[in-house]
Length: 615
Image (cartoon, rainbow, N blue to C red):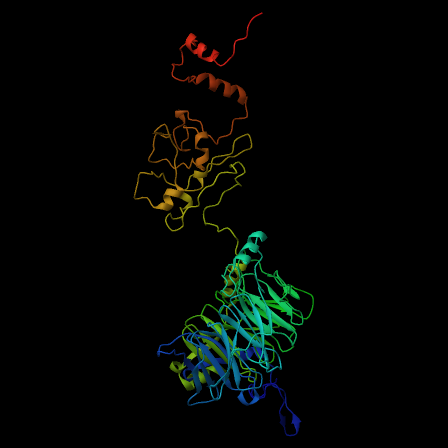
C-alpha cells in the first residue's frame, strides 16, 4: 500500500517544464508513526447498564468493504456498541445488551454485518449489527469464554476457547438442538500443564464430576484461539507457556489422555516463573508468522510454516501483567501494535525488532486491546481500563495540528521510547531476572564452603531491618593458616540480639535474630551487645558449645569458637591437654570420689542370670 496522499507526494516525482524534477527525500513509513494523535472527539466513554463507566474488554474493526470504517466495542457488563469512525458528529451507530455478563472477545463474520460475542455466561452469540437481532446461541463450554475467531474466508465456521481448558469448533450450517447450536469438534484439555505426579493427576481426573465446571487446578485455561487455515488451528494457554497448532482433520474425542498437537512451540524465554502464558495471538496476511503476547513482557514471533520452533524475532519494551492485552498488525504487515500494562500502547517495526518502539500516550490505566483498521493505515483503536475507547489518527504535522486544535483538545500523542528506558526495562524484565534477589551491601567475600549443609539462616527483612552501611559492618578476620577461612555469619549480617521475652520485637526479628542460651546464662559477658548468630538450626542446639561469643569479645576469657579452625601445629596434643584440664563429670558424685561397688547392686544384677548345677 502506497500512501502518496499522506506523505504529500514525497514518494513520487514532479515534472516541471516537461522535465522530471529532483525527487523529494524518501522517508520510511516508521517516520510517520510519530504523527499519530487522538483528539477529544475521538475519545469515547464505555457505559454500563446503570449509567456508570465500566472498562471495555474487546474491540474489532469490520472487514467488510461496505463497513470498513465500523468499529465494534464490548465491555464488562455485556453491552456492545458500534461506532462509525468517519463520522464527525455522532459516531455511535447502535448499542444493545448482548449478555448478562462480561463480553471478553468479539469477532466479525467475514464480509457480513454480523458478529459473534464470547462472554462469561459460558455462551457465544451471533448478532445482526444493523438490527441488533439475536441470530443464534452456541452452548457447550463449562466456564467463561475467553476468545473467538472465524476461519479465513468462511462465514459459517468459527472456534472458541474457554477457561474450562477446551477448544470448540462451531458450524452455523448445522441444525439447532433445544434452541442451541452444538459444537462439531472439541479438543479437551488442550493446554493442561504436565503434573509432577501422574498418578495424582489421574486421580483428580477420575474424581471430577461429569457436567460440573472443572477446577482451575485440573483444567488449564485456553486464552486465545486462532484459525491459520481451514484445517489448522493455533491456540495458547494461561500457565503452560506453550503455543500449539492443531490439525482439525484429526479426531481428539477418543483420547483419554491429553491430546497431542500437530506442532508445539515451547516457551523460548528465560523467566524462572513456573506459570507463564500468552494473552494474544495475531497472524500476518501470509498466515506464516504468528505474534504471541507473553506475560514475561515480550512478544515472540514464530514461523508456523516450517519446522523450527524457536522464535524468529522478539519484541520488548512494554509490560504485560494480565491476560487482557492483545496486539494487532498494520494492513501492510510492517508494524505491530500492542497494549501494555503501563497505560501506553506500543508500535514496533517488524523488520527491526531491536529498535525502540513508538509509544501512544494518553491513557491513564492499562491498555488492553488494540486494533489496527484493516483497510486504513491511518486509524488505530485502543481500549483501556480507564473506561475509554480512543481512536488514533495519523495527522501530518503534529505541531500544526496542536496549534490548530489546541493543546486542551489533544488527549493522546505519539512519542518514541528512549533507548535508555528500554535498556532499563529489559534489565528488570521477569524473563531476565535472576531467581535470587541480591541485597546491596550484603555480599560475602568468599563462598560459604565451610558452612553446614543443614544450616538455614533466615534472610533479613528489607522492610523491618534496613541494610547497614559498610562502615557499620564488622570487618572480616584473616583466614587461618589451615586454608579454611570459616567466616562467622555475624560478620556479614548486622543482626542484633533478640530476647524471646521481649513482646515488642517484630516477628521478622524474632525469626532472624537468635542467640544460644546454655545452662540459663549467656555465653558472652556483654549479653546485650552480643551480635552473634550462633544458632543456625534448632536441631543442632545440643552440639553447640556454651563458649560462643562475639569476635569483638575479650580474648582473655579463653572461650573456644565452634566454627574456628585448629592451628597448623600439633592439634592432637592441644586437644589432649584441653581434655586433661577439663574436670570429669560423673553422675551424682564429685570429681574426686573413688569408684565403689555395692553388694546390693551386684545382687540385683545376678538375678538376671540362671545358676547352673555344678557336677
